[in-house]
Image (tube, rainbow, N blue to C red; front, top):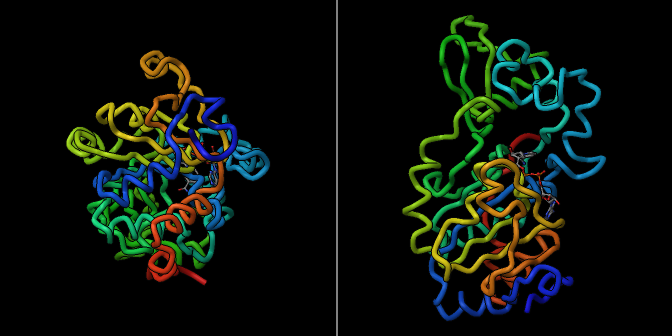
Length: 300
Ligand code: CNA
């Protein structure tokens, strides 16, 4: 039975964290996929969407938008990028430092256990622990790169962060005095998800042994439906502070309305991601390696 909270009794999840680590130790678990969300980056100072009083939706109230989601809509950004930039200046930390959870992902890669990271996060923190970019699928795009909407010139995150400090309002392209608006390479509402996302799901999940889902409310589609991929013998470990959300629309019908983890090979840990991954590493004797993962820091 699950070993934290009342998780097993209240949800039906029956696998313990110990069994998960045991299967890694015995090499029964060889292929791991990560599914991550905003909760893995809150300890790096990047707020999530939905935590009360701290989440982004709470902070949006002052921007006088027609409706809160407008700030993340492509059509609204193209007309009026200023509120988006005001929000980014407020929320994106001046100094970017990856968390223990990001280091854990790198450790899985080092151990040759990582098939892929599917992330909803746009903060680019995975790149600071030097995970092979082929192993990362940023379903909603990334701040790692950005493109001028006028001339198509691209720049990296370091340049973008410097320009956020130097320029006011929307960041503008400096190439040959182009002055076009720069858009980080994000998938805003109205944009389609990257092809890499769709193309890799079947091959990645077909022989996956363990899916680790962390720091996500599982309310955004189509990403949330990824939990239904994979063979039935695949173990699932859900690590989050709160219970997963309701799924609406067609996907909700398909998934039965609620996101549930009630299979006999599900494990739920309702706790901080950093704390749970430390527990996993302690059990596997990986604490030193976790501590020694090298990382970059961006900004001051
Ligand atoms: P969400 O809906 O805000 O959910 C985050 C979840 O994480 C919540 O259920 C929290 O309870 C939980 N949580 C918060 N902190 C922790 C923690 N330390 N340990 C464990 N759990 C925690 O975010 P989702 O990712 O589910 O929603 C998808 C949206 C959020 C995507 O479109 C992202 O682009 C978008 N987003 C990304 C970032 C980022 O890049 N860091 C930040 C904010 C929003």
